Length: 403
Ligand code: PMP
Image (cartoon, rainbow, N blue to C red; front, side, top):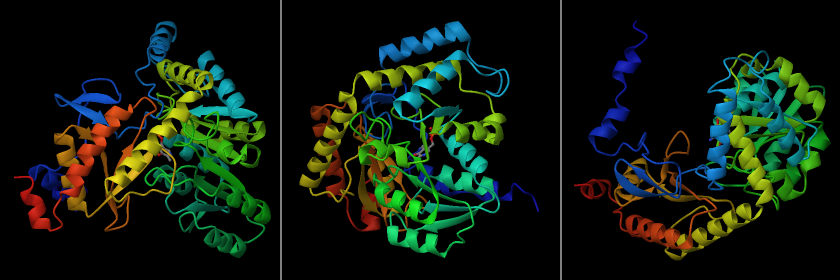
């Protein structure tokens, strides 16, 4: 049997392309911003994780250019060996200080950060308690660790407690949760997770990819938001969202970070973050520290849009405060048609379909930036409401809309 048979037989993407509904890989011709040019046309960008609007900030661009001039385009090696630059250390020191933890280490992507931490910390005989809606990289990290994964119902603390109580008290336990869930915008129940961890002798790790620069008075994330920074054992995050770059980090006690630094295969066997990425993340961090009004303004934008969408009669997931606002489109076809029409009308949003959501609960994931203006948001909401409120229920009618 030819291993490639499945590739030649794979038709789903082609089917959507033929129908003119394929929503992926649209290329930008400009930098990531609140408005972009994609495939020759202006689009309002509400599908990006550029939460603080910093990817195009001149200070950050200048810092990145300067880093390339000083350190070259790449590091040609692992952090472990020849790939450690002074700017990596500066970034780690400033992050640890900002996040009130003893130590920090950085990884080449956020995805790898979860792989690298979890596979180093947990082993064959340990248990990982994982929220069902955690990010894929947490699942993949758990697989790489060979530990036993115990999945608990999304944000369901009773279910988590039940599973913790069933576990052998002698087994090493890690509870891992997204701080802010990437698809729904839900915030984890950190106070209860911390309480249960203490009660059952587990360690707590928070993936704050969508929390940093978003939650907390200083934008330090989910743990700051709940006043629980000292109670969370490991916080990880990424540079690809609020910090306008690429890479990821872990903060924890010195001994824990040092252990991961010497045991983590995704860290050791991978080239380090490029000079430009390290330096731009550092500059973005400095801007976040100097301009705490950015996260504040971000939540104001989110609040404004959330209320505007509800006023227009749209069905959204509305029990959060973060700048991730999912709008229900229910079926795959409805989602694809809605994305296509919105794109044509100049609004970029992301489709969320199975396996990312349960069947029949498809969404359009919209996300916002602290530099979005209310005027631009009015324009986007007007278009979204016009498109979604006028989509026919019937699937055949739906396809006719495209003709
Ligand atoms: N964790 C979460 C919760 C995420 O949403 C993402 C990215 N979407 C990652 C980790 C991975 O981060 P990166 O894309 O920066 O590798």
